[in-house]
Length: 158
Image (cartoon, rainbow, N blue to C red):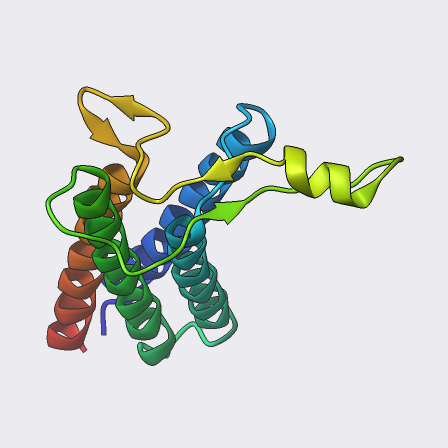
């Protein structure tokens, strides 16, 4: 059995969600871009992918944790694609807007009233015409495809 494809799949399934989550939190805490509800859904899928991938490191010969991480990446890609479609007004979203409340010293009601509303249908940041949700769709989808291709190669080799 050649363990190299499984190791590569596990590494990819770990690095991609970890990197995308790190980027999302950097945009949030360093860039001041607060996540909308759909952004959170995408993060949840990446948390699941990362958890399954880390479980794969504890069970290095098992393919199933890596396959579940790949499925979570598929979910993240689908959510990112759906979110991008809402942002580009290709279809209507099904979620409500969210707000990023910062409680500090002072009146909590004033903090709630002053909190920015983050709409799911507005692009907060884009590069080359692609929003963060669009990049999540592209990167997560490509990573999921590569994870499953490597798992198939590992299965064929084993």
